[in-house]
Image (cartoon, rainbow, N blue to C red; front, side, top):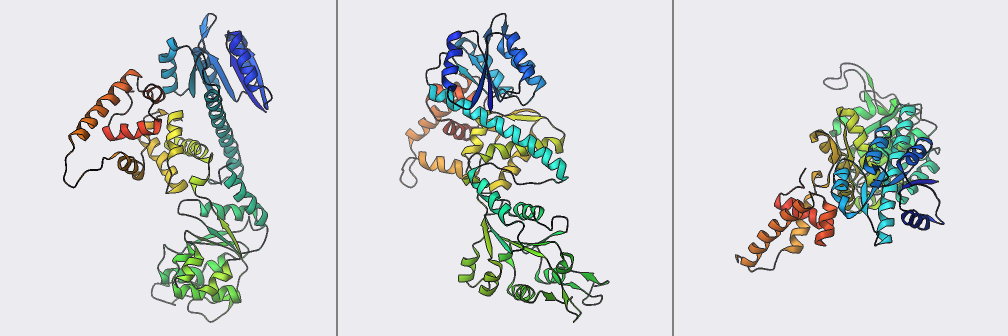
Amino acid sequence: MVKILVVDDDPYTLKLFERLFRGKPIKLDLASDGSEARRLFQTHDYNLILMDQRLPGERGLEILKEMRKERPQQVAILITGYADVSDAIRAVREGLFDYLTKPFKNLEALEAVIEKALELDRAYREIKRLRNVLDTRKAGLTLIGHSPAMAKLMAQMEQIASLDATVLLEGESGTGKSLAAKYLHDLSQNAKRDFLVVNCGGLSESLLESALFGYERGAFTGAIKTTPGYFEKADGGTLFFDEISNMSEKMQSSLLHVLQERTFSRLGSSKLRSSNFRLIFATNKRLIEEVRKGHFREDLFYRINVITIKIPPLRERGGDITLLALYFLDQFNTRFGKKVGPITPEAIEVLETISWPGNVRQLQHTIERIVALHSGGPIKAFQIEYPDQIENKAQQTQAPILKSGEISLYQKEREVFESDYLKRLLKATDGNISEAARLSGIPRQNLYVRMKRWGKPPTS
C-alpha cells in the first residue's frame, strides 16, 4: 500500500488531503509540526512526503533536507505560499521533486503532480529491486520495465522459456533483442550452459562460416590449429543469431542444412558431427517482407518462424522511460564515480516527450553523455540533447509561408521579440521552466525548443 505523509499546521489543508485520498489504496499520515513529522519519518517508509514550508518555529525545507540526507531518494513535494516561491524554486533545482502553491485552485492538477511523484518513487524502488537481482545473478544486464507492453513481453517469454522451441525476436534497432534472448536463456533449462551470440551482420561470409562450423588445422591459410565452431560449443546451451536478415544467401543455405539434419562438418573435414542446442534468432526487419523481396530464403524462414515475439519500441512503453533513465543514471554514476542527479521533473517531462527513434539504446547513450559531461547535481531540462527531428518539426510548424528569396521584416521582428521575451521570462522566474510556462501560458515543450533555438539555457 502507498504511504504518504502530509505535514502542515493548517487544519483545512490536512482535511483537504484526507478528502483527496479517501477511498484510495493510500495510508495517509498527518503531522502539524516538525517534531511529529520527524517521529513518523523514523518509523515509516513513505512513498511521498508533502511538506509545508512554514511550520511552527521552523521551515519545512530544512526538515526535508534532514530527511533526504538520511534517505537520499525520498520523494518529496514542498507546499508554499506565493511569498516562498523563490525558496521552492531553488529547492527543486537542488533535487526536490516539485513544489505546490497554496491555495490549491485546481485539484486535478494537484492529483497529477502527486501521481507523477509516486511514479518516480516506484521507479526508485524498482531500481533498488533490480540492483538486488543483479547482485544475486552476478550479471550486468536485465530486462527493465513495468509498462503493459513490457508486462506482456515478459509473460510471453516466461511461458516459452522452458520449451525447446526455436524463437524469432522481431524489433527495431535498439529495443533490446539481445537482452531478450539472454533473458530467455537464463529462464530456460539450459541456463547453466553456454549462451553464444552470432553477429550475422558483423562478420564476412568466410569468417562467419569458420566461426559457425569450426575448422581443422590447415583447412585454409591461417588455420594453424583445429578449432571447434559455435555449433559444437553450443551443445546443451543456446545459440543466438543476431540480425539474421543480414546473413548471405550461401550461409542461409548452409544454416538450413544444419537445422534440417542437425549434423555438420568442420571446414577441412568430412566427419559428421551432431550438437543439441536451443536456437534464438533476432531481426530488425520483418522477415516475411524480406522473403517477398527475395532477400531471404522462404524455406529457412518457415524453419525459424516457430514462435515469433515482437519487442516493443520505447515509444510504446509508456511509463518505462523514467525508470530506464534512472536505472542508467545509477549505472553510469557508479561507472564514472560521479554523483549526478536527481533528474528534475522538467527533465523527466522532456525525456518522456521525445519519440526515441533509437529506442532504449539511444536513451542509454543520452544518459551516459549527460553523466560524463556533468560536474554533479540535478539534471535539468536544458541539459538533455534533443533529437534533430523535434527541433526541425517545431521550426517547420512555426515558419511563415514566404515566396522563394523573400525576406520577411515581420519574421525578423518576431524573432527579436521572441528572443528578448524569453530572456526576460527566464530572468523573472530564476530559470524555472514550470514558472515560466505558468506565467507565459506557453507549453513547457515549446519553451524548451525556443530555449535551444536562441541559445538561452535557464540560469544556474
